[in-house]
Length: 261
Image 1 (cartoon, rainbow, N blue to C red):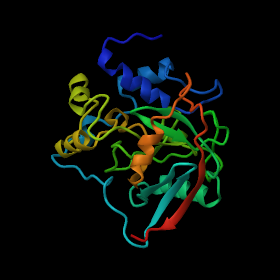
Image 2 (image 1 turned 180 degrees about the vertical axis):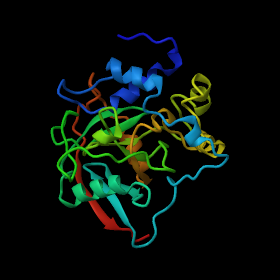
Image 3 (image 1 turned 120 degrees about the horizontal axis):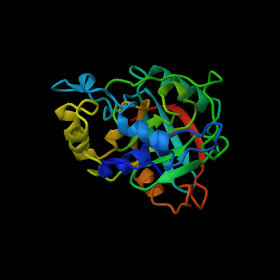
Image 4 (image 1 turned 45 degrees about the vertical axis):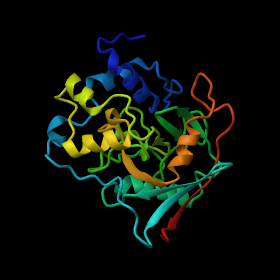
């Protein structure tokens, strides 16, 4: 396995690799050397210049308004996870997710990869991390929406190394409140040319928890505003060596509905 000089970031990079989609060689794993190397060199991270404002806009914790379209993931034996969507800043990401949900694409699919204190990942009809497609029939580029970060409860697309390879697979960030694998301060100290967050974003990460090392590499398009306790419960299920739950965790349905308050 590829060796790193900065051991403090190995776990962060390995987990970043775990969010990659499987390609022709099969499902990506935490031992994907190229993905880990890319994560550490910052090829998929936001540049310092892009996040150098004194105060940054943070959309994640805005509550939906009455009548606004939200997503509801009903997990068998667990309950509902309600997600605010952000079409104003993540238009293609939201359009893809809502389109797939409305055609019933996600119904009865599983969360095929769950890593404690990191994330839960699903949306693959093959159930092994190698499948899935967008509403346009191929991959799409959702970009890096402004003002959306990987705080606990954030919803984003898994990809194959770039946001242009988004499909149907998505993940929900799952960390305890205030918990960070690597803090923003540690990441900025490690490489300030690649890692930089405005002070209010750093403060929010320290309060809410999350995975800041993923910022800039993935399309965040939603945020759990109700049912985060269910996400955290799912994060504790027993898994095998590939992080697949031993007992199937199934999405009974994913619906797009109007928020009623």
